[in-house]
Image (cartoon, rainbow, N blue to C red; front, top):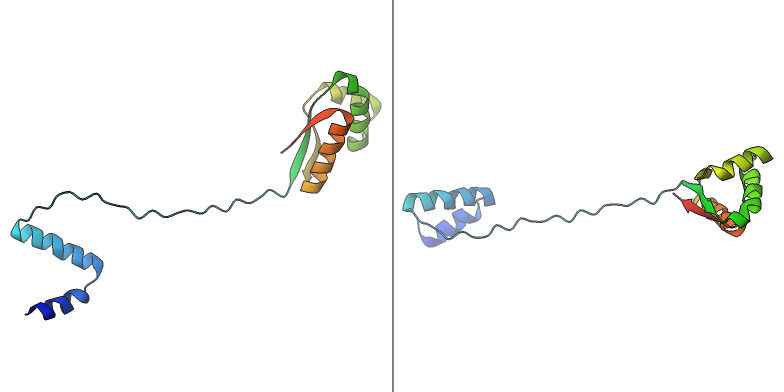
Length: 122
């Protein structure tokens, strides 16, 4: 077999087969090669981050001087009686809305801020 025939034969081999052939030749002829760093092919994993479609609005705090507007807000948003709204204002955090659209959640949070409270959108 001449050089051209050898190259043609090697061209028809798969990469794993060539790797085995090289290993066999090294063993047969006792060839030692310096360690080469192995570079792993890194796959870049692209994670699709889905933006949530439902949000909760939670009243977290309010200024003491703004208790009356907050109680009015609780009555309006949650449909509570006056006594229940007063009690809810003392037991924070209080969920004001669940599974709201982003626009509705932002609007409700703006109402809370306007009344003197702090709201968190989750």
